[in-house]
Amino acid sequence: MGEKLVIKNIGMILSGKIEEPVFDGDCLVAEDGKITAWGREADLDCEGAATTVDAKGVTLAPGLIDSHVHPVVGDYTPRQQQLHWIDSTLHGGVTTLISAGEVHMPGRPKDVVGLKAMAIAAQRWYENFRPSGVKVHAGAPVIEHGLEEQDFKDLADAGVKLLGEVGLGTVKDGKTANQMVSWARKYGIQSTIHTGGPSIPGSGLIDADMVLETGTDVVGHINGGHSALPDDQIVCLCESCTAALEIVHNGNERAALLTLNTARELGKLDQIILGTDGPAGSGVQPLGIMRMVAMLSSLGDVPAETAFCFANGNTARRRKLDTGLIEAGMAADFVLMDQAQHAPGKTLLESVQLGNLPGVGMTVIDGKVTSLRSRNTPPAQRLPEVV
Image (tube, rainbow, N blue to C red):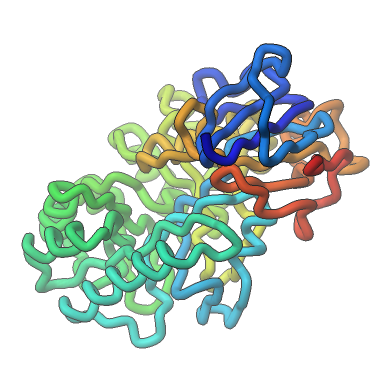
């Protein structure tokens, strides 16, 4: 028996599961940082808890996941000379970040030896140091000409599990990119592609044909980062891709809604995942994932409980993570939130579907409380507390 966490008096449990977004229950138990049980408090073993949280009737959801960030080192980004951006993101309910490439590292090496070294180092430094407890999956090399199959094996053997956005390096043709993405997949490395117009000098247009030819696991910022593809190409990608369709905060909102509406018509809402694509030229968005949930729910006419699944469970399943879902054995990573004070709507879900942000009252990572009342969201009606 290890450390036990009991969260009681929960008003609503959001599951992260798009097929059943709301679970019945008012209590959840975790041990050794993993979820063990949930349901009615009377039916659960709540004895011997090291930590007990009184949720005060607020909503509990799996911690949100940002599927697209560009970290560099620690909790600092040279892109906007900003400190503690990851801590601020935690205050927006995000407990896991996934790197799409450490591309803002000044002097980022483009040679094979250098890019491998940096990817392995970045994977290590975020494994060894978790800013404010946040899980950062980093070490995502950008593919360059000269990489061979053995290089992908070397990277995988060293613990690298991601490729940075295909197209941000020198490889701009679908044939070469597809070969490298296939090598990466052979060794268990996930891939993302830059979609749309260039984001920074050195990146280029990646159109639907190249996305389809390359065949990555994730269609990175399908709504552009920043400039989106023409509508017909976005529709084509939604129709043709079995990959994750990633919508980002730093993209084109109209294209985001087109993607959402098309995916819904096709019965593919389970493929939608969310990212911020920050830090970037438009800065850091600590509330970016929460804003995406509210925006897609309110303007895309999606029930809020479903939109939250885009921000946790869908990403968890697509990215094969052990977090983002309320399921026995999954990491006990949660955000506890409530309707914002004086926000319209009768419930948290109604308020979010009207386009309002909820107030975050607490985050939990691996069964440990990592933050209390958010300094970034609007104040919540009710706040959970550690008893």
